[in-house]
Image (tube, rainbow, N blue to C red; front, side):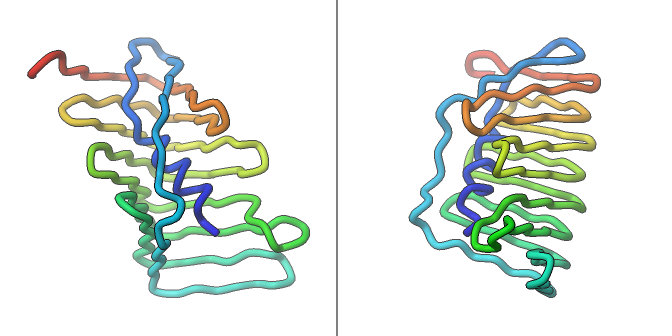
Length: 161
């Protein structure tokens, strides 16, 4: 059920470089094992069948394989037929972590129908000793590219540094 957001989450933590106020990022071929079990824990869950919305709140943890997502709140919005997830919105200290990368933002909004994952608010991506930050990162999960905007800053470690 959350496989598409977990794949997108892994894509968003891939490292990229940038030096301008707006930077295009190629996220490459990152993958997630979508056959792994998905674990979701939270302090509470509320479901509204009429609106097609489910909300996990309080210390939300979503894990699949080596991928971890944490946030204070994750809202799952289902499509008109309520059988498919249309959108996921995570807020409150959003963190994505794999064994090699990490990403942080104040919020994340994944529109499955458009294939866009938006990270907003003090976005920070790290891979090893390299890091890139901006106010916003929008990822096209269909083609694996992203754009960062809002005072982009990067630290790229070369060689064995």
